[in-house]
Length: 269
Image (tube, rainbow, N blue to C red; front, side, top):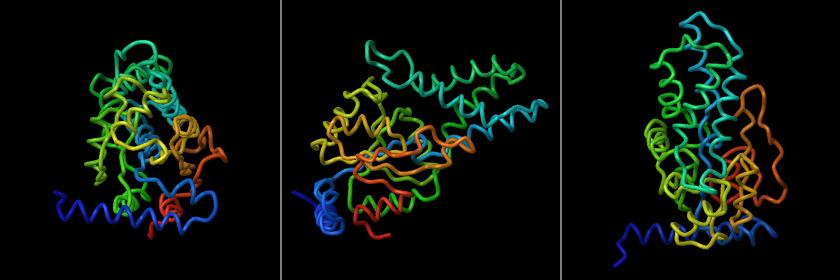
């Protein structure tokens, strides 16, 4: 039998869906009224990777008396890591995960930028320890708590399970579930990645809203039937700015912040 806690959560979800239907006018209400789960891209959308990586590089460089354009190198670290992960598993089972990709990206940058003085321990600290201890954007933790009263909230990411576990503990994040592409071996933006998450949630794709600050992720999710919410993260890439700062107007929600997104979903902040 359904216990009191589960019954209470079910009722809150039902009320939230009614709120969305009445709080958002027109076509937006029609598209979002049936949403029961929110799946969040995590690297970049939730976690401030740029500050973490740049800081670790600069600190390590200072120990060796090395000064470089750490902003550029941090962004190259991200670009190369992503390049190794997007669509991974399309033709054959993956031979590595994001933790390995981070190390491979760092090694290529060490060689190109004359950072051979970085020790093995320092390289591990940059590529692994730093990434497992990233801070999240400050507008997210309190918003997540509010959203979880009304929706199932899950991390859906190319990051490893362990990164999500470690960063959740560091930042006090309470996910309802974690879906790493590591589990299926089919990485975003392959349709199999999104279809698998819908299957695990036991929901239709249209009952799930993918939340991200990246058009490529949201466009792929929408192609699989998900609803989509673009949350702006103008500082994700530091002073360089994000490569796709302009949201696709086809997204169901475009928000300036997580509290803004929550309000558009009918959640009081």
